[in-house]
Length: 117
Ligand SMILES: Cc1cc2nc3c(=O)[nH]c(=O)nc-3n(C[C@H](O)[C@H](O)[C@H](O)COP(=O)(O)O)c2cc1C
Image 1 (cartoon, rainbow, N blue to C red):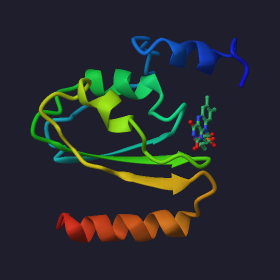
Image 2: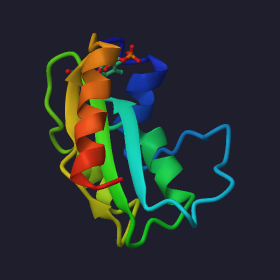
Image 3: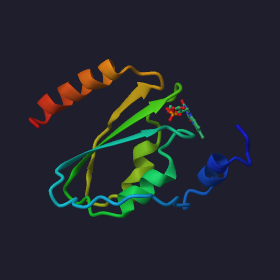
Image 4: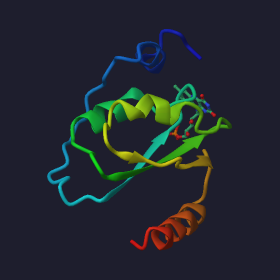
């Protein structure tokens, strides 16, 4: 809620791209990406855009997974689309911020079956 906090300053400027510390070594063989993040002001933190923009996601499936206090996925995908051109961006799944590991595992097992992973 502090307007001068780092997250507030960063999220006020949608073009801001916080740096990601590590790089993925090989994205060629990734067919499906589970992209997990907390919802910040109704969307993904812009560091998620930084991450996506570092690689080519064309024809790859991306499933956003978020935790939040109460909001749904909101405009999340609209804000992510331009950072992963050509990707098949799914609706994704929102969990409560205090979701249990068991709940996540149950969802993940279902997703794996759905996509025959
Ligand atoms: C800067 C910031 C903005 C947030 N904005 C939202 C929001 O718009 N809607 C919501 O339901 N929760 C919001 N939250 C709560 C986070 O989604 C929640 O803390 C997170 O999913 C839990 O992960 P964490 O333990 O890494 O914070 C926000 C949290 C922070 C720090």
